[in-house]
Image (cartoon, rainbow, N blue to C red; front, side, top):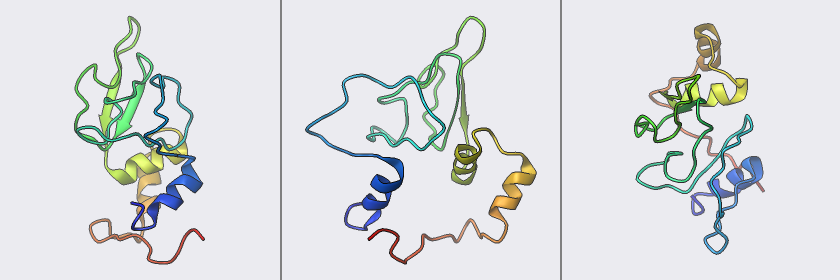
Length: 125
């Protein structure tokens, strides 16, 4: 990612800083409505380093959403791990909830999702 120049964009807009010399000591359990990046394990999923609060609903593009891996049940509510496409996850992050079908269709209008490629213009100086 550094070689392609994507790293600077991630640092600027997500506040993410990857530093092997200063790993975090505790897993995060409280989340804000924002983008989180985590060190990859078997795939890019929260189940490797992070857990959601028991009973939460988690949406991800990962297929490793085994029961109890990312979020546990509580006595009152079952923890949910939802598998979604990247556009749905991104739009859900922006909205803070799962989009309606109309919101999703409006967001992807004019985008050929099977042929999308990132911008080649410089995004960060």
